[in-house]
Length: 207
Image 1 (spheres, one colour):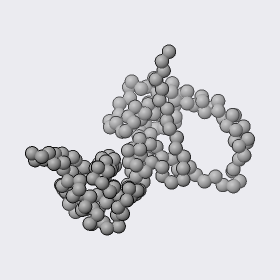
Image 2 (tube, helix red, strand yellow):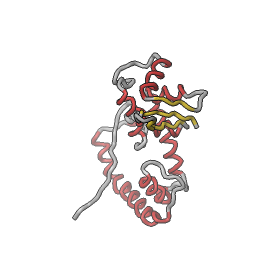
Image 3 (cartoon, helix red, strand yellow):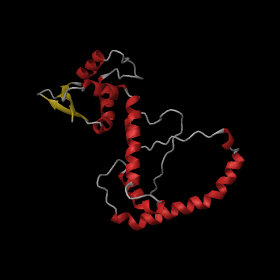
Image 4 (spheres, helix red, strand yellow):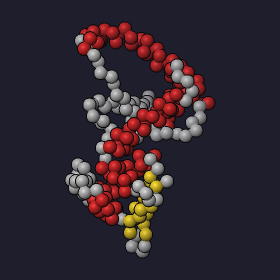
């Protein structure tokens, strides 16, 4: 028998691990509360408590799946977010999870906003472009022109592979990666070719 299965990947760390916008756009960030000293457990105690809770957790998950299976065909999303199938399934399971209608999508949108902020704060290209577009509706030129403009306007950008892309190819790739994040902030990055030579042009538009 053939099974087609999909499962999530869990990433754990102290800093924001989904720093690249393309990963952040497909992730749900969770900041866990600090465990006070009087609440910490040994591994043995934790495993015993988890073994007791496991049937309840499994039952709740099965209830959610059962509810979603019964409602999935009647669920319609006004706007489909990234990971649309995942979002539709959770919306279908909302009644069994004790959530009001629309609660998940509101929470999901807020989480994506926080992820966008984290992705922008750690990406020099995503930080520089909104500053460049302040007070203007349009900027157009080659990727080389844009890279040089950003360097001239923001001299603190360091030219190394770990902060600001050094080559035109890497810079173009960085622009494509930040497209979804900047689009949600009202900035559109377009790519086209002009002239007989097919010169590649980057167009920044502020909505």
